[in-house]
Image 1 (cartoon, rainbow, N blue to C red):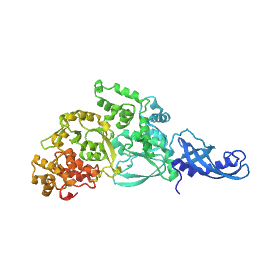
Image 2 (image 1 turned 45 degrees about the vertical axis):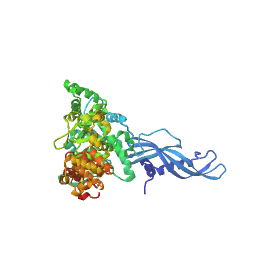
Image 3 (image 1 turned 90 degrees about the vertical axis):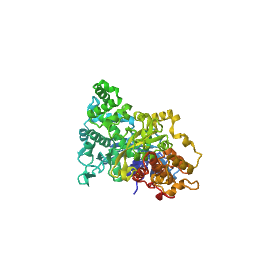
Image 4 (image 1 turned 120 degrees about the vertical axis):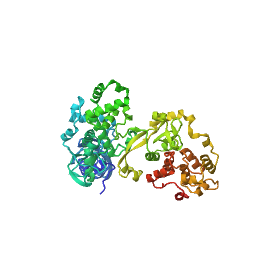
Length: 613
């Protein structure tokens, strides 16, 4: 039978509290309550009641209080002795206790419904309401109870010992996933957990008790002992803050909830918090409070000052080296990962650490380099980047999107675009900047090529954001008058498609035989493209542009003359990338790229397979 209610608290009340609340209101009405109509009414007989909503959920550990508002219907005799039936909204003040099982549920008060501005500390789905600003206070509260010494002086917080002191069981040696998807996990009930044997490639069920934390041994070998320490802190916060959430789930649905510590970052930005799922909120709590417990605000500044005092004076002249060294020393002292130390510095107001890449697992570091395949994926994802590249404002050279100006890009003897020495020395203003984001390929929706990423679960992908590139845009504006994309030859928009093709062939001194070798198009197509009466196909134009090594600006111009345009689809973006990212390369190299993408609707460029398309 399906549970009634729009949220978990309503479902909980409907399943476990209805009879208790019914008994309470019945007793009140039978005792002669005049809440319905006033003096003179007698013989109240409750008929039914309907839950309207719940509110004001306040949780303290395993105990919680809340209000349940019901519409109660009752029959009674009015002052003239005639039977009446009427409904009245009542607020029932309730409290309950759930610790693995339901321990108590009682009604502590009943009153006629009235609006209330009171708010609880937990959502109606039993997710604690904790803002980013409140996390330090939560960490302080935790340390005051379990390890107050960390609030008096800088010290390493012994999370393993704290966990054991809380009655939790920490176990090592079990591989939690075949693809290193989880660092650790905690079980909120006695259940069986699937673990893996890396030596034999076998999976088995491991029986664990409530409160068991499993730490994957790969956390230590692949990351660091600091990552292990943070993983334990993460799971301990799940136990401290989310145990009730898990117990309610089990009571309502008979499901066994297991919280995981994953290496992937939250997918939602801070300005979109309202769209998070309950599970994402739980992970955010565990990450944020866990880091603050290991490096508490009360004593962290003193440790920073102490470390900095021992640095040689010359280190302060190089801001990047200074912060890398500071991150190393903090991670070593507190027993955390370098990533945790970096993020904690950022939370403390040290914004300078944002641009520092400390190792390959530093998901939010930045890069200017992006290979052809990842450039394709990002062009698919980001229409602004697609516009910048498609319009020729930025060109692709040496695995960088660089301003399309002779000061930033030059061409070698084979026609391959290269960054100039000036561009290499000034990447911050000559090339586009990308944030490295760790992506779970298996959960990405299938965009990533099975050929390229079949055996990978996580891969770092550069992501474009205009706000990270103000320096490049400003420099591009300074060079606008010299911008090469609008040369005099390209301004001749009044000539026809076929005449443009003839001009290109004549300029490059290419006849029918070389045309076939360069474009993989037939000799018949050579003559069709030069004929004003023939209608060229989209793909034959692309093959021509690839074979002639035309840039994206000229390619777009030719497509437009023939009545075509890139439409922004994955397939068209693949072809656009084959033009943009392979300057000076043959059509065979571009076709190899298209084949490896393994995208539906994309095939190598050439005449026979593309006729009429």
